[in-house]
Image (cartoon, rainbow, N blue to C red; front, side, top):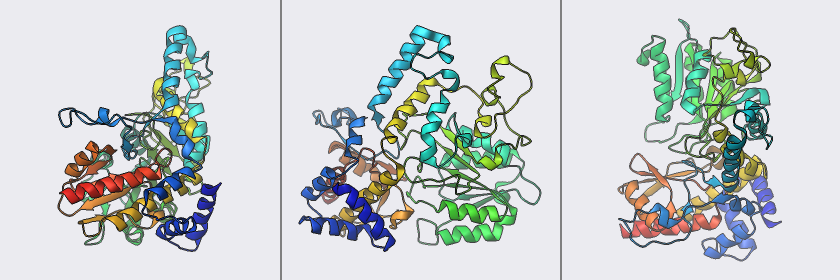
Length: 469
């Protein structure tokens, strides 16, 4: 098992503080290959123990992605898809599962809530999904609920856990947070009658930098912590791909008495998480990126077990958060389920649930540790090829170079060219990635389905595009 030995070597080299570039050169040298060659990319693909997972997914064709008014005749080949950080690919088994649910709806109708011929009773369908999420987020079943959409869940949790007082009312966020997070937090601050300039604290990069340093995050928490009610951060920043030190920031904030909330939109299914062990208070996520549940797919929350029986907290209640034993008795008095499920408000869409379940069945064929280590190699290989092939072309990688400080994404900033122009030129060549803020290209090789040859093709296509400009 050659790839397994590469993963072991990767773990050992990381302990020795060796760079991924060194590891890649070492693998190539041991096998008599040029690390810049296509043959080396194919060698890595051939020896990838996780390569079979790619067969679980459907890939878009180039002809379906490029508008016909741009290029009338285009390749019928599969596109190189590097945009899983925006929308994950369709797991083939999801189509089968959704068709089964449609069949059950047609043949059983309401009876399927408690008598589902495929064993997925709609009345408790979330249990099967949660059982497959526990290992991905590092949590106990009582700590997870699958429900709603991400921003809706932010509001529901903040209704209970953002309880400002005269001395502790501030919220700490990263300056470059995803806009919807900011909208939600600012509206919560205003709802409670505070001025943004007084209640919102932003973590900013140092002058000339793109990403903030962990030391600066900890410094602000130490300085302002006594007045901070809530620390809210993206575990992996959507724009830069920076992965924050979740346990260190959580511990520092809680030491100052703050509630800590992590947005895992770009982290879940991407990096290893141990939310329970890290003592994280709360987390929220969507599932249509690395979890591949489909556009607008159902979201989820984590509420640490230590908060499971805090029934005296204010909350916006709904019947799906009510005690299961008496839920259908239609009692007037709300009895919340202990833990995260008590924050549910409405019954979930069965179609959304099985769409997520289909992807989680693929995750069940591996583990987050092996996926993460393949991701180290994929993104390290991407970084290596960019550095070796694009000398003097006016770009820089704004994602932290330390592989422990980013997920399956490298963000590339260009000095002069607009990223949209590059995106369109790449699309014509059958490469799909995305751009942000005009000059940044986001490239995300997802270890579940991307190959090393995908990375190789991308870098060569990008080089050709840039040399034409």
